[in-house]
Length: 503
Image (cartoon, rainbow, N blue to C red; front, side, top):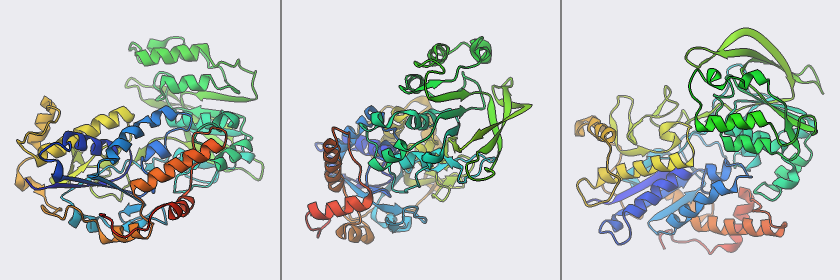
């Protein structure tokens, strides 16, 4: 059986979960172990994707999955190459550019775990100095290598969030939590400095549907209710007076029931007892925004009032209202990069079936796969990402070792139907070679690694330990993050001279 040499494009949770699953199903004691090699490429210099650059700093427990990723990286069959931008566009200027065609000759298999990196914008709210996607805000407070500018919080009193998912509540919590409390978490010093100068006094969280359709989780809502220095503006009691009717006549789920109880109880701090406040503004949908009239003036955000139709969709009632706000932050979901190969604009992600990538004619692109949000869109949590990744890993092994004694999860009836839908050899497209050098990488990557531009996992572990050490020096802070220039300078001092990538 020919070796399986896999390039994974993307270094987030889905990528590591697939790699971990493959390594565990082909352990070092397996007769097939020596036939597996995995090279993981990320355009970011540090691994873990959204776990490092998306998870809210005050949710450190969510990052525990990195222990599993670290265990996988100890296997010499897995290698990480950071700071490598695969594709035509390079949003981070200092990365090593590499075309996908340069990758193909070196691998028998390719997996896209590139996520959904493009925010969905509201058609009535174009980006401006007073309207920004939540992704830019999250990238600011996690010190993402794309380096969005910090929001001018020293001039902002009122923030309006469009969307009522967990990301919106993360942003609201960051704005309303005392910086002294955030200082113990993984919040960069530069971010804390901006938050300490903040004049934000109110955060409106706007949603086009009602309290029983909101996308936030009970955990996130409870955290908002328990903010130490902020209180919730009371809801109109009519919104939650008849729960089942407001839920389209359906019985409430357990999560809806718990959320209802929190809304009925209200925030820990009574209304009017705090300087900072927040509100959940249901049944409102933005229709336009007018720029501030001059310095010190606020933008005018126009909202259509909505109601639910028989299909639980928000429809305008004809009534509108306007609120004054300093900054609008839109949090309406994400899509994959439309420049990605095999992207389907109708889906907002790559075109796949059972983890296998399809071309525009619906043919399987042999040995090319996608996992996580790149394959299924920006939905779900880490647990669902893990289950999808495991399923894709199983598919890769079943395709490469048909009929062999390789343990994978048994197929369900639906999965069997999907397997049959793949068709025969005439229904596939070939883009990858069947035989390759197991140790080779594109020469551009090897050169970048020798020069210290391309990072490996040993680099990351050295930076990781140093960030933790710097955090401890600041009174027990979780870590103090480095930007790329700091990391590169630090690594140049501590790493051994690089000569042979495969040594």
